[in-house]
Image (tube, rainbow, N blue to C red):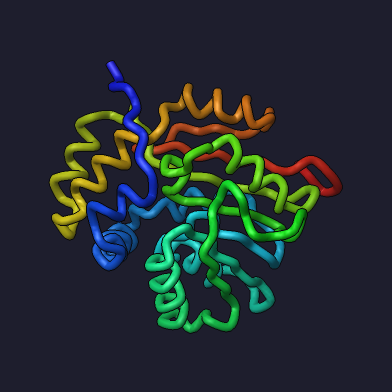
Amino acid sequence: MTKARVAVTNEVVLGRVTAETYDRFARFLRARGWDSLDSLLNAGLEGENFLDAGSGPGYIGLEWLKRRGGNARLAGLDISPEMIALARRNAAECGLEDRTEYVVGDAMDMPFPDGCFDAVLSNGSIHEWEDPTRGLREIMRVLRPGGRFWVFDVRRDANPLIKWLIYAIIRPKEIRSGFLASFNASYTLGEMADILDRAGLHGCGLRREFFGLSIVGSKPGLGSF
């Protein structure tokens, strides 16, 4: 039986580990191909102006941007100034500082005009959002008509053996309490379906992943599919 959700915010997670520790954890996942990049690459996001909502240290968006043409640009949004500083540093290390812009802000009240992005991605962040329904509506607001979005997160109803195996091998060890807090705050597949319904996002692709879930959809309008 899946345990009840224990809500957690970005501030609580970062209160348990430093941003630098989380950055080391993200590098650990990336080095082993456990960073959900394959799911993103298969999501069909197109265009030139992209948003990474809840960017953290920025790796998933930067890996995505490396694979796009030279005209593609990425904006990153995170509520943590420390994470934004790390994302800017990591963009510079990748040689992508001229194609990225990172800003401190809240996913529930994005500081961007309507319809300004061709696509939006969000990785491992939605379980920290105070109101995920509102955050998803904000994604739809900043998307252009026909724009596509991808959201990925861990899943509370994942196989517990997988969760504990990951817990045992992840590094650095200091991240483990934050890792469990994130898992316990994440949504089941059924709960996420209800959130999408409340947000008015009908017809999205909600998929069970290895230890997470992914959502792919598009904003109605010209060029949507």
